[in-house]
Length: 442
Image (cartoon, rainbow, N blue to C red; front, side, top):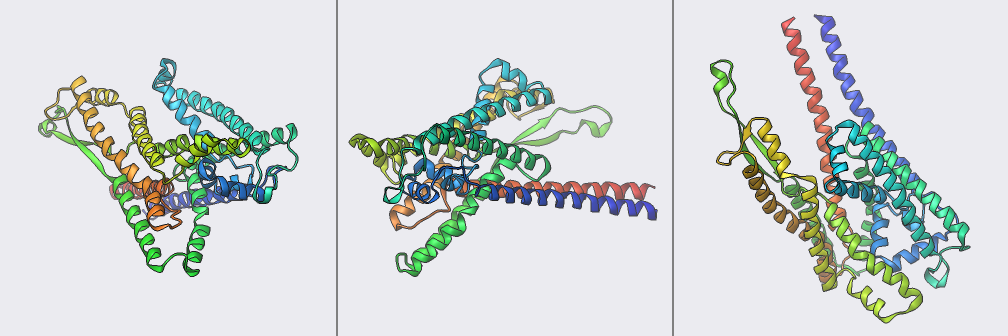
């Protein structure tokens, strides 16, 4: 008995040791990510690049935030994980349209490996394309004081930039996959989280400096803090919110107790699309403004300047288009990740039904109607959260860095990370209970 208890204690400590090792692996990977963001691609003037990004903002500013400032330093991690995310979304969308990819999704682990291979190939292509576009465009740009961003423009710089940036994007893809497999939580999301959080200390210090210099009143600083806490609490509430549909399972034979009804719930999240709609909407709406700003630098076209101004954050056209794109992408991506007909078929195969709804097509239509209403609420919630920084900047003239898409990503990733840790702890406790029950039987 004593030996069995000793084995149980060793197993318990082993589970905790595994969790600790996973957390340490995540921390080590994030350290590697931050160190790599300071390794520059040869041929770029870092001071001129930084001042150029400060002048442009737009899509480049958003990418710089997601990469933890790596784009501002033009490091090998300047592209971040955005090529991988874009390739993953494209493969998911194609998987809902192309029959061949739909068949792969039904083949289990073997099909998933092929889809992963397609995602990696797409990541290489997108990373190389983005690296080439950035390298070519940077050769014509200048920073503050008219200093060229690129020391020696030409094919040599373009080639080195494409190789360096593509290799950096592929390394981050591999690092994210390792963090998912050997760490805790989604590795790609954690890398984006680390990039956003890395810029927070500088943003907080800048805000405090403005308050110290009298550019920002103390009252407004406390109001900003209150808004940040309030929006964070609102995001946590909405991300945890679910609509639970009651599901009854068919009666089973095998004794008097076997004929009792079994009731469960089908949980449906309000925000099924996650943070994808704001990211895609930001990229799509900022791309014309960024391209117009780059072209306008050399051409000085009046209409390009007008377009850049109209699509700047805080302008009515920008806010309306941003809200509309978030709504569209919320419905579009939810339709990709959630199939009401497939859910209804799974319920039918497991002998479950929704009270008052006939199995099959009627169940699918009912679930689809519920998801449409939930997605409407979730899309409006995303619009409100993402437009908060714009409203604050216009009304109070404050540098509200921690808001919108960045706040949403940080809160969602932290919630997922804590949920993964809790799942490991619950699994550990469940194993302990089973071992104690076996000891009592022995």
